[in-house]
Structure formats: structure tokens, C-alpha cells
Amino acid sequence: MSTLTAIVLGAFATYVAAFVTGRVEGNFALMLMVATVITGLYWVAEKLVFLPQRRRAAERLTVAGRDRESALREQGFEADASGLAPAREKLLRQPWWLDWTAGLFPVILVVFVLRSFLFEPFKIPSGSMIPTLRVGDLILVNKYHYGLRMPVFNNKFLDNNEPQRGDVMVFRFPPQPSLDYIKRVVGVPGDEVAYLNKTLTVNGQLVSKQAMPDFFEKQGMTYLKQFAEVQNGRHYNTLNDEGRPAFVQNPSDFEFKENCNYTVEGVVCKVPPGHYFMMGDNRDDSLDSRYWGFVPEANIVGKAFFVWMNFGDLGRIGSFE
Image (cartoon, rainbow, N blue to C red):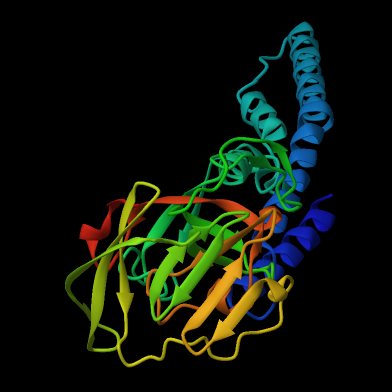
């Protein structure tokens, strides 16, 4: 078993290293589930097979030691049993290959349950959600807010809240589901979303928009127009770059593209049933539903709600809308 376990652990470590370094396009949820299952099998085997075997061996050693001690005393010799306890402890000790499997199972199981059904951490890699979220923000995503889903397969088995306009939502990127994206919900099923001349309307109603002081974007070393928006009671800020055109450049082909009308002013889309229209708060620097289409309900991961760390700016820690 030690040789087989060494091969399994080596293969798994190699795959994880390739995933972390970007050499392979892995699935972390799948890796975590496989690790939970494998270590769980070792944990069960330890409880039902290996630990009882070690206990029986230790008991046989104890009995043999007592018999030897009795035999020596009958012959008039003084028996020395000082070495019996260390030998018994060595027999009971968990071998290394069980330490690295069954021993890790409780920790891996807790991580698996927390990440799959409660909260999952994400790191913001781009500036598409500036100013709400900044590059380097480490955020928490509520996995049960929109209902519980099976890990890996992502099919919902327990309903909860429906996504609302204004929510910041993490979802699997429709063109490449292995990637997770984060944007703001601006249109729910049945809505007509129009983004024309950099102004957002939903079902013909103008989304409240108030001019704010310009925002200094450090990465681009430029000032951007900033606006306070209110949607569904949620208050957040958006950015516009006056140097960018209003029209959507080179939208890809996507399902239900016939629901969208592209003009030099922007785009108008009718959100199909079971889908959502997403936009980044950094409106002129966001690859979102205007370019690749609608997010199906099956792709939802969870609702983002809290920045728990940003190593470059500790002042970022806190909740957000």
C-alpha cells in the first residue's frame, strides 16, 4: 500500500503543480472532490482495517511479552519489560502513507464542504469591476444565496434567492465554462436592457445615474468619469472613458444573439428566460454580456459580498454592494 499511495500522491502533486503554474487547464472543484473521495476511502480503511490490524498486533505483542515475563520468573530470572511499551507504541503508530491520506481527510472534507456549499474565495484579476472591486482584492462568494448546487456538476438541488438587478455575481464564463467571471447583474429574464451612448436603461426606465468626482485609474495613469448608480436599492459607482466609443466592437456569436440589436450608439438586448445580462462597473473596460451574450442560470456560482484581504491596500477590507 505504501508504494501505491506514493504513486497516487506523486501523480496528484504533479497535476496540482501543473494546474497552479498554468501548464494544464484544470478544474479545482474536481480536484478537491477527488482528493476528498480518495482520502475518505483511506480514512474508512484506516478505521475498519488498518487500525484494528495494528491494535491486534500490539495486543499479540503484549500477550507475548507477558508470557515471556511469566516464563522467565518461573525459571528464577528477573524479567525486563522496559522495551515493551515503545515497541507497542511503534506498532500502533500510523504509517506515513496513512498520515498523508486518512490523516488529512477531516481537513480536506471541511474545506470541501465550506467551499462547495457555503463560501468560496476568489481573487480579482482584472479591472473590469473598478471602482467596486480592485485588482488584487480577495473576495468571498456566498455559494448558497442563489441555492445549493452539486459540486463539479453545478446542478441545483435546493432553491433559495433569485439573482436581482444590482447583484455582483460570480459565474462560469459561457464561452469557456472552466473560467470564473465576476460582473454585475443589470438584466434578469424578460428584461429589455439598453446601453446606448453609455447610458443604461432597463425596460425603458433610466437607471439612476449621478455624476461624481473623476476617478484616478492608477494602472492606466488616467482620470475616468465616475457616476453613482442605484439599481434595485443597491448603490454603486461606475466608470466611463470618454476616449472610448459607445458602440460595441466585434461582438462574438452567441446563443440568442438575435435578441440583441447593435448600432453605433450601443446595444439593446431582450434577456431570454433562464438567463441574465451582466456588465462590469468599469463600463468601457469590461468584456461582458455586450460582447459574449447572456449567462444561463446553470452557470451561476454565487453572490460576491465581501473583500477579506488586499495585501496592497488593507483599507479595501469590508463588504460592498
